[in-house]
Image (cartoon, rainbow, N blue to C red; front, side, top):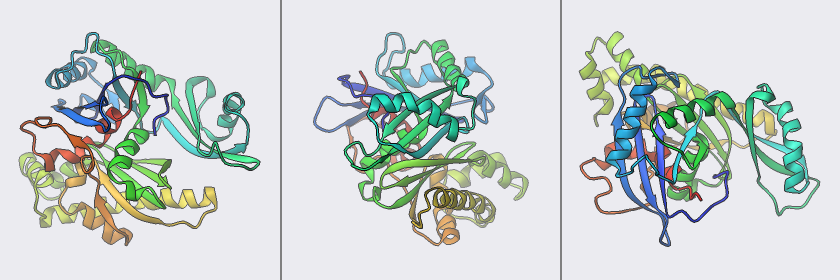
Length: 352
């Protein structure tokens, strides 16, 4: 769900700066359907980014430049680069306000935000989207987005260090939604959860009739699972990584996932419970879709499905997307596809 007006730029570069990897996806919008033309992935040194905080800007900036270079994008003078912010300092909330014109809504939004956002209003950037502009009635549904200004400024400083001037800064949840909507249109009805399992964090996005209306973060990712395998199961770092990145389930991995899968499942249940209480709706989550590097961990979808007692499947950002020959080069599609949901979602956004 892009929060900006579409322009005529023919190519968009999605830049996803994660805690473990920098990922770039390039999409050509010049034809009738978007086409993925290039993907590049560059690893980050351990602890360069910890819990979303950039510990070594120089190392991260260099990794960003390397990833863009691999994708054939020259940072200097490059246009059409879109990146995103996310985490606890971003609030997304669906609210009801009196039905007014968009300009009036813009004037009302800061007051409304004071009622719904637990941040100092002087320290945030606000945006919103009217979800039912053509509907009738005294009230309308609005998706309110608030991000701490310091979060955006930190991202902009990093990009400036890398020689980049982005065309737009999106929100992680909306970018994930963009890729999810294109590739899983059948999931745009009812209430579903899109769970992005990253290196350090798991982001839970609740969609209601295709609209991302609630996000929650769980401080758990592939890094924690690797540490569990080493500490609790006595494995070496290489052995742990081999299990996490492999294709086969193991007793070691199943034991770790029993505990960590419970944490993710509880996060999903709490998000659903909050949604139900806030909207006074009895709608139940009908399905869960996983993405991110942790999505392909053998046994994770099964552990979540057994715990939640609903269907859990891995989302595929390449399912319906046209991919140009050579876009993935030597990359193994099954291994990298879960990693690409966010950068592809960013690149699907046309920018001026």
